Length: 172
Image 1 (cartoon, helix red, strand yellow):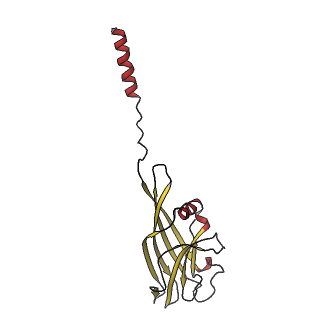
Image 2 (cartoon, one colour):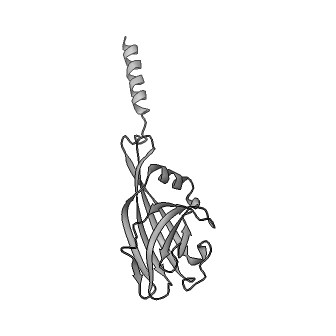
Image 3 (cartoon, one colour):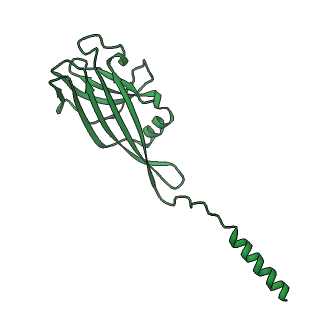
């Protein structure tokens, strides 16, 4: 009986020493940020800009806040935009900005509106300007598609002179 008790004790100690030290899988929703920094240029527009805004450039920082459930499926998402514009002619005005679907050299429909609108345009008296919008919502389907193929999407800024787009850059 003493041997049986000793064996049971040793087995218990061995089992206790073989525990899993890895962190537990998340049990609730988690949020991760996915950030794209986009170089914007009038030369990237389709067709490339050839008027007074041909030298215009900019940078867009797009931060997607992706919420996933315990299984990893995207359940919700929001996006923040911070865009700077430079080398526009003095007096230019930015009036719209969107993320569109479409690879390099291809135009496509609007997928996400940044929030910049003609009712509150960005005046660029010295040829520079910036805007930022936070908490813009988008569908889970759109977020999943963008994550799967960021190069298939582009950010552009529309101006008064170039209503179809003045500067553009691919997400990936």
